[in-house]
View 1 (cartoon, one colour):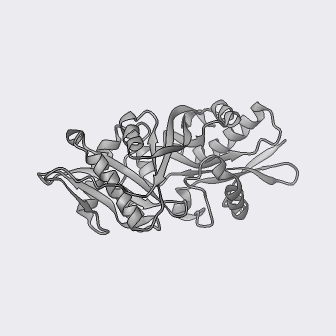
View 2 (view 1 turned 90 degrees about the vertical axis):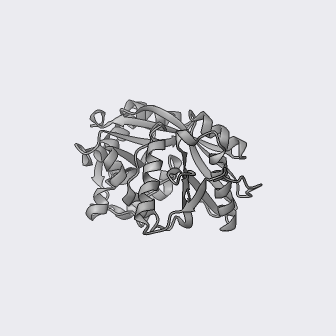
View 3 (view 1 turned 45 degrees about the vertical axis):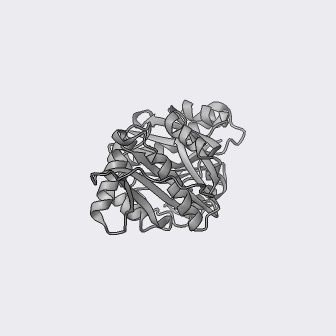
Length: 312
């Protein structure tokens, strides 16, 4: 079946949004494009979006969109918000060709600005994974989405001299400290990229931000040594824990456990019934902590990556 790739901004916005609403979450529900998704101007350039039309009637049978905002641009790494094509009874080679063309259209929009791209998809989608690997992607890692109820349990106090303080909107110094601590710890995590102060500041202006949800941990000498981020989750009645980090020199003191318990108390206090987080399967220390704290694996996601030079 013949097909063509078009920019979603060239008269196909409604079809692009409708396709994503129907199919994008089959692979990754983290950044499903909706009516707020920008297609034009500077914001649109940071989110290159395309549709695949097939058949004589030109119906939309696939869509792709990338995230290339400041932190991704700084890391020279694009994240696919959606990369999806309908099988339509195609053989493996034809389906791989559709994925290759969609991925290549997005990659072409950031050529020279990025070196690689990545995406997430649920484990078990063998046909889709095979098509993507034939299109130039390779396995990078497995990530677990974990969850539990928001009942906090007994409080775990911080060791003597340690304090935890909320980073307030507009506090540029604390925000810079938070970003620096977060980045130096997450460089140990496979697949992580550095955050930028402006990205975290933008998050604090978003609907996902919870007042008091950005926490900076300080050592007895006053230096920043850990972070915590709690935000509203896409799931109704749920919060999401992110950016749990403790500097290597301060580990083994129960600080991460105290931060997790603090996040559970905050979530329960804000009226949320459930809490989720994400962790790489190979991050055994973090995984063990979350299991001890009552989290269970709800979904396993495969991360695939591709060098842009391998995408046409």
